[in-house]
Image (cartoon, rainbow, N blue to C red; front, side, top):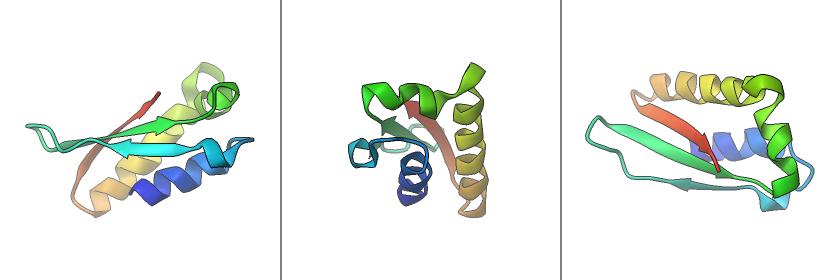
Amino acid sequence: MQELLVTLAKGLVEEPDQVTVTVDEPDEEGVIVYHLHVAENDMGRVIGKQGRIAKAIRVVMRAAAVRKDQKVAVEID
């Protein structure tokens, strides 16, 4: 799952070497939180107009998580 998020983000940004993902342990509800970190000047590219790209990233991650019987959340830091 982490590799999927990194691959998606690297395809969007101008500085792919600055993309990192940290993963939190599952909380009491079993939700795994992925924190996406990108360069400051690439934040707009990852979020998109009105958050459309961020929403699309979250949808793809949730769809992949369902296939693995997991619950995930993506936060862009």
